[in-house]
Image (tube, rainbow, N blue to C red; front, side):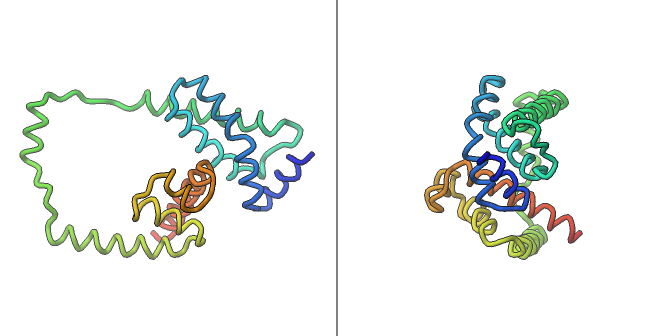
Length: 183
């Protein structure tokens, strides 16, 4: 009964309810995916993506089914998508000699134009970040400008690591939407 109450609150956008559901089901989804993938990094990525999709689509959740069943179904689909992406990725083999030739040709020092473009892009990016809610601005700032690890951010914000990962994922998604809408 308690879970249904949190799901209803989450459907209304209640961040505390999202956090509760994330904490309640994180280990179950992660454990399921770890058994399936046998890879901690992939399992973590899939679990983060699962919760992100679940929270974006929580309004479509049918309470006739268990919430964890719904999450596992999403996780399976995310895993299938990941496998398809890996399968479609094509790798080109090059020799060390070819790699060295390409390295010698490439001039990695930025020109004055490159520096100006970078500065302008950074300025626009910072303007877009300011459009995010303060708690999303904060995780973006800590992760990408102060280059802190997820664990360091978790300790600084005094929040569980899983919350930091989800918050950062949602912040990036919202930022991408803002940037896309300004194009």
